[in-house]
Length: 224
Ligand SMILES: [Zn+2]
Image 1 (cartoon, rainbow, N blue to C red):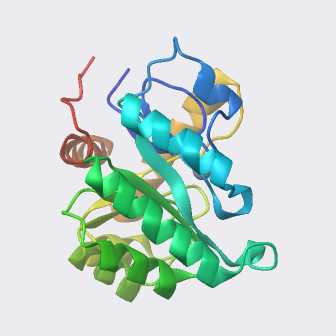
Image 2: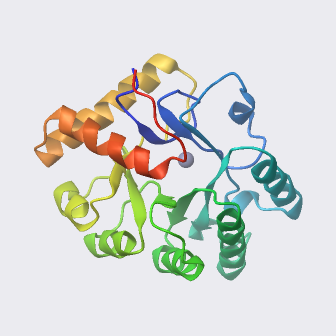
């Protein structure tokens, strides 16, 4: 039932905005799966010109969006952070030129990632920062730049403070498995846990996320 929207998943569910870590990742090839929105990305550790060329072609020739892409300090030894930054900026600009949405992944590189987003000066509701674990100041900075923040199972911070700082918060599973039942359980528990931590009723949380999905997607989101 599509009243729970998952803003970031690697499992091709009709409830989800599905992302990949690099082009042609196996689940992305499940053509019969009909996710809410389909993204294809290229994380820094998988960077190559060849993969970027493939991704560019896919972006140009289909209705996919770009993600996940970003900066990851854990891989700075293999791809230096300034190089990651150049690649990220270039990819964001390319997506923007095609009117595509972008899902961002950022690990231990918050300031630099914000700089890359700001330099591209994208319109509001174009960028989703997935797996947000930052401070309320960062959440606010992202809100001021029109960036949605995805709250997933790994978020253990002060949810009321973060969601006040960035009212464009959304929920995500970041599920990488293949078990549909397990996936649905995790998605439901993301919503239940957010409702509890925010002192909201579940329907309010669903309504909020549905509204954000409408604003973020390029197409009307059906309700079943
Ligand atoms: Zn992911």
